[in-house]
Amino acid sequence: MSTTIRTGGLIALLAVLAGCAGRDFVRPSPEAFRLGHTTYAQVVERMGESRAVSDGVQNGQKVRSITYRYTTTTDTSWETGVVPVRTVVFYFHQERLVGYAFASSFKTDSTDFDETKLAALSKGHTTRAEVLQLLGQPSAYYIPPMVTATAGEAIGYGYARREASGRYRAFSKTLRITFDAQDRVADIAYTSSGVK
Image 1 (cartoon, rainbow, N blue to C red):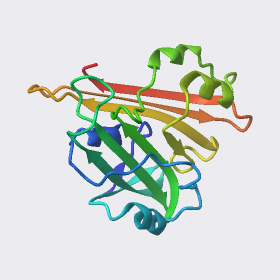
Image 2 (cartoon, rainbow, N blue to C red):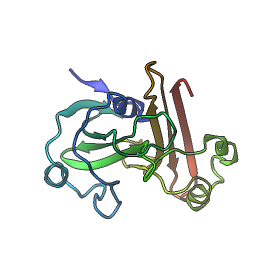
Image 3 (cartoon, rainbow, N blue to C red):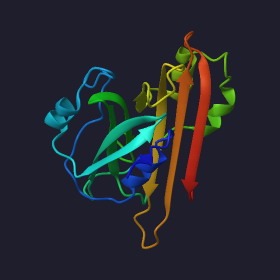
């Protein structure tokens, strides 16, 4: 049965909180995984098989996602008392890569971002270059059908954490910024959940 893949990638980031060990990997680069070109088989060849594969629907189109997770107790996390976890979710439509979202609470490659800067973004005015200057390098990239066909493409920022203490306290936040044909902000979608 098909389920809708949420545009903010919140479900994928919440999956980080499960905290399984997995095999270590590095943050994907846009050069290594090209949207619209890289195939499902090429990602699996590079990343290995994933036990977390799911099918869903995005903007009326079938999309398959595969998730990779890594966590360890021998490394340092971005925040004190947080379990260091790294995750990446790849999205495919007709066997071609249409998006990926990376999130990390490791100190070395944390994807935490300052959501208070969102007030400086203006739909129809703020350019992609200004977004990058304000928020830094994105950790997620999307093309249709992960965004509407009229939008073209989007970038994203995401972060999730689970505290290592005896109490289970989790927090996640995602930001997706879609651009128009003039490379100006067309839409801003921010979500967060849990205890900050």
